[in-house]
Image 1 (cartoon, rainbow, N blue to C red):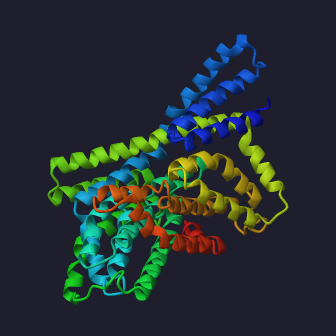
Image 2: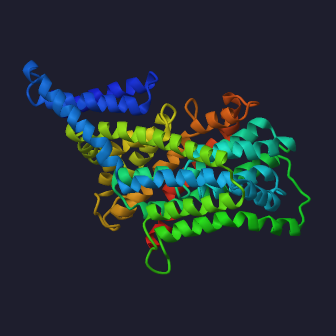
Length: 465
């Protein structure tokens, strides 16, 4: 049996395990281990006397992956970004941010929901985890919206959809994972996510205002705040701005050399927020909770990475990524049409897999194919299919894929953010949250279409670096 055939059979088996309910990390790790053993055994024509040798070599090859890959310095960004978010919550910065957004924006139709979206976007700028963002604002924003008569399904949908913004707005754990998989510059990818993330928040806000205008009972406006009250709400929210500026300057200093690496920026940001939390009276029990939640989420992400990278090592031996790239580039249809089909496939796949696992499983095969469509890793903008150089195409595709991962955080039946919001609120069922996020599918579709049609939205900021 040829390596490519083995790759297809093992990949099919892994997908069956995932559909049957096995966790992505374990399904990918098991498939990768079995595939490596079969690859090495095939080199000896599947002779029974060589099975022990194949097992030994396959297990050793798989065993080298977790340490060699996860010891990467870039991955240390993930726990620091997550910790920043939890510490910011216990420092009271999230409530201050929501209060400021409410006083300035809540007067528009659906104003409290719009305030929630922009507050989640602001919190996303200090938290790299969508799940954490959704959990925090389910506690803060939903009670406020219900108090003034918001539809509970709509209120839950706003929080679940707003939480997805943490996937794009830097610091973003998923963008870091993408950069590591495709071996691109973490700093430029984090910069590239800023404008699309804000753009997504604006599209959400426009959708909410439109719904509130048509259905006046859905989200009544909140009025009565004086200009003095509005300005007084700004100082408590300014620390978040300070942390964002510090992290951006570490990643990319527009006035000169960067102050340090993204990893160092994340560590400094976590330390600053920790000091703010202490200043605001954070106690040991709250610090313990922040550390435990950070550890749980980090372990979950790292476990997925370990399992999937074993599978990725097997794919390399099976030569499946290069074969898929050759097949995609040989098609005679428009490269843009192929790209759209790939994004649609992500939308379907995201209904059955979590965002991180989906990216880790697919990118080793899909990324080389997209780069081949554009003309290769080192193609110039003039000679490319999408009108951009190889490095810029890698950044643009990364933002598109991560935006699709955002979309998958609210799509049934997996929609992780929806489960988180329902888990935090006893008065909401998962079905309520899924009904509430339905209008936001339209907003995400519009955003993705505009990012595809106008790549400059993504590429302008990283092109300045």
